[in-house]
Image (cartoon, rainbow, N blue to C red):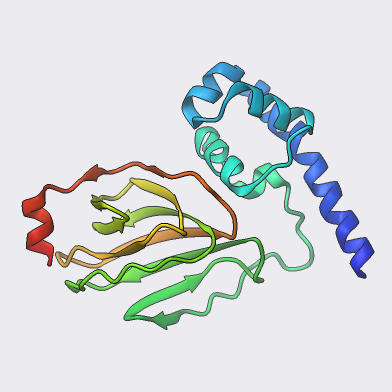
Length: 204
C-alpha cells in the first residue's frame, strides 16, 4: 500500500467512526445528554462526532469506550487482516515487566505492566502525549503534578503527559497495570482518592 492509498484508508476509517458511535449509542438506548454526563464531553461535541463534523481523537474516544464498556477497537472498527494475534514478548524496563499488547507502533499503544513491590522515590517526567491507566491488581501510587494518589484494582486515571508524572508500586506488594498511550491529549481526569499526607510520608 503506497502513501496515497494508506492516507485514503485512514480517512475512510475515520469517516466510519461517527456512524458507528451513533449506532452503538442508539442500540443501547442512551441519550446524548446521558452520554455527555457520563463522559464529560459536551452534547454538541458528541453530536458533531456522530455526524462526522468533528474529527475523532484519542481523548474523545477513550471516555466514550469507557462509558459503553467496549474495547476502543470497536469504536474505530480496526480490521482483522491476516493473523490478528499479537506475539507477546515481555520487556524489562526500570525494574518492571512490560508486555506490549499492540502489534505495531502507532497513534495508540497498549501495555500491561507488572511493577514489583519496591518503595521507589518518585522521579516525575514530562513528554508529549496522553495516557490512560487501569489497575488490574494491587495498589498503584500515581504522582501527578501536585497530586499524590493511591489507586486500587478497578480504578482508572487519564492525564496529559506534559504534566510532571510518575507511577509505581506503593511498596506493599506488586501492582499490575493496563496502560494506553497516545501522542495527543489535553484533559486530565483522575478517578482515585488523594492520599493523606501521612500516607504519602510512609511511602517515601
